Image 1: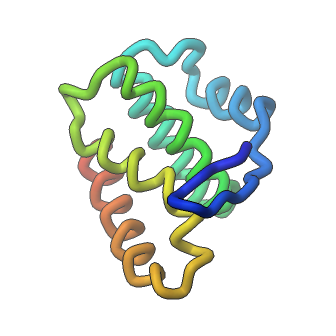
Image 2: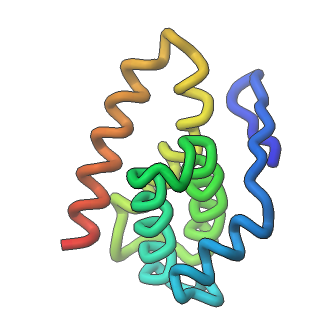
Amino acid sequence: MKYYSDKSSIIISYTDSDWDKLLESSNVSILENEESVKKVFSLAFEWFISGKYSIDDLSAVCMKLFDILQVIGSNKYPELFDALDDGSELSFYIRKPDLLPQFTKLLEEFFDIYEGLNK
């Protein structure tokens, strides 16, 4: 997958097979509502925390889920929409030293949002 931010681009090796495994492990076959997006996001974040996913994997998942949530609409969990939007940029933040404070802030927000969504 190739991602763009401003004038930069990076290639992340997150495959369709990786995506299929995430969906299968989430017991989600079709992302048709906010609940299914929340479920997939939560598992991806758990995999990141456990070390199964890298920051690039998490960022790729956020990008895919953000695109899907834009189509579905975000009324029930506006904080999920914000997390996915910001999360899609994590791969860029980690590679730019001047953006590391923002990266740290985003990760803190991710933890807060994840905890809030899973109470």
